[in-house]
Length: 383
Image (cartoon, rainbow, N blue to C red; front, side, top):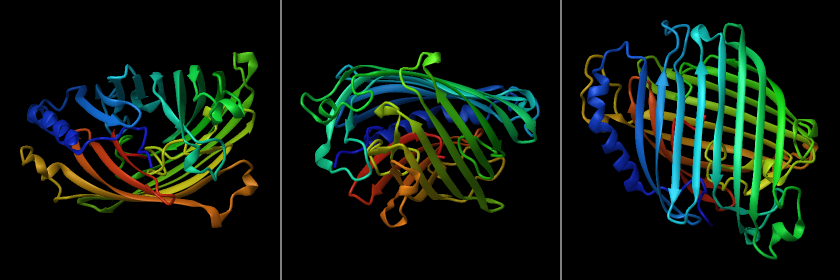
C-alpha cells in the first residue's frame, strides 16, 4: 500500500528540524515577554512515492493584536513552500487572525499546488487495484470573517474559490473512462455562512476548551462556478486537561460533511488524510457524505518544565500521543451503516518547538482497517 500523499517523512528529518530549532530557542525563551511577534522557521526534507526527493521551508508566525491575553488569543500565520526534484510545487499560506478583544476572527488559506495524487474512484468500497496516478494544478482561495456575537460565540460569512486545471489522468484509466464530473478540470466559486463557538486556549495545541462549528457553502454559476452544489459541515471538538499541573490532554472530535447537487470529484468528501482518519490515503474513498470521529491522548515524556527553568535539556521537550478514529463516506445519508464503518489507529511523537506559544511539531504514524498506513509531519496538532 502506498503511503500518504501528505509526505512520507524520514525519521532523521525530524531530528534535523529539532536540532535546527533548539540552536536558536534559548535566545527566544529569554526574550522580552512583551515582544509581539514570534517566528519559528523550519527547513523540510521529505520523500514520497509520488515526488521522489523534495525540500522546502515553512514558518509559524504567532502574534497578539490585543494587549490582554485573557481577552485576545494569539493569531497564527503559517506560510510554506515545498519543491521536488521532479519540479512539483506546493505553496500555501494559512492564517487565523484574532483582532483586539476578538471582535473579529479572520481565517483562511491561499495556495498553488502542482502535485500528483492517487485516484481510486468514487465510493466507499474501492479495491486497491483501482489505484492510478493523476497530475493536476490547483489554485485555492478561502476566507472567512466572523463577528463576535457574545463571549466565545461568533457568526459570519465565508468565500471559497478553487480552480483545477491541466489535469493529466492515466491514459485509458479509471478517471478518463468513467468521466466523472471534473475529470478534465473544474472551477468552483461559492459563498456561505458560519456559526462558531470557540473557547480553546490555543488554536494549534489546545489544552482545554471546545470548538463547535456549523457552516455551509453554496456554489453557484452566478458566482462563476461551473458546478452548482451545496455543502454543510459540522465540526465538534472538546479538550480535557486531565491534571492541573501536568500536560496530559484528551481530545475528542466529531466531524460531518454533507453535499447535495453535482460536484466535481475533487470536491466530494475525501476519506483520510493528516487531520482525521489518519492512516488512510486522503481520497482513498470519496463520496457526497462523510461522518467520522476520533479521540487522541497527548502526554509529555517528562514532567512539565518548572517556571523559571528555561534552559533544561532539549530532550525534555518531547511528548507522545495515541489516537483512534472511526468513520465512512456514503452517497446518501440514510446509507450510513454501523456494521461497515472503517477505523484507524496510531501513535505519534511530539517536539515542542515553541514553549512560549505552546506550538508542537507532530510526527504521526497511522494505520487503517484496510491495511493502509502512513506518516504525517505537521506544525500543530491534527485537531
